[in-house]
Length: 304
Image (cartoon, rainbow, N blue to C red):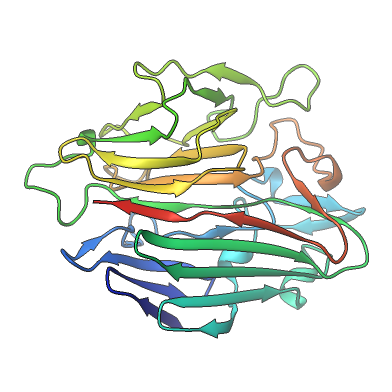
């Protein structure tokens, strides 16, 4: 089921399947801000990643001594129906709770509440993980938002190379070391993610090219409160909140010429290349105590 929310400036369509944005449109000129989800290229738009982000080596974790099987990427929240718990003209709230579909993979009682609300500046987007169990649990959470690039209303001749990814503080960037297939390379202790100086020509600016990024570029140790996609031709910007998120992945499709750019703030990391598969040892996860909740905010702001 798709839910449409709308205000004077924007219109958004959200699916109850995965609580995933399907469309986000700037009404004055019809600009579609989110990738169209062409299945021949990449069939998603902006999936929510829970209870872990990115790669799961071997397709399983050992959680409290039990083998819990997963697909390769991003957990299960993106592939399950959610319940609509509130619907207003410009706001909708979805809830995913533990069930038979989750308990054999994630043996905890939880709620994942996803709120979308249109504002004068864009789309407020909040995800809350609630621990409804009688014991603490660890988890990761993030998003995989694909921004259309170039956009449907760009001037004729606009190419992906006319765009850059911009970090708010224009700070020198630190990359996280990953294998070619996207697993974390650690320092000698086997626990600390390896890092490197990204070495961009202009601090905090990542140029985009027709060659794309392969398995992506993962960044950490930044202080920027947003990461955005800027069109250099007209200076337009769409950004997503990164405040409080320790990592941010930048990714483009690898099937054909790049047609979108994913900006993905994460609480969590892919598995390490030498993982022991034990959930309690997995690096980058958060912990939430019984009866408590963890809130992450990924507001999208449009500046054009």
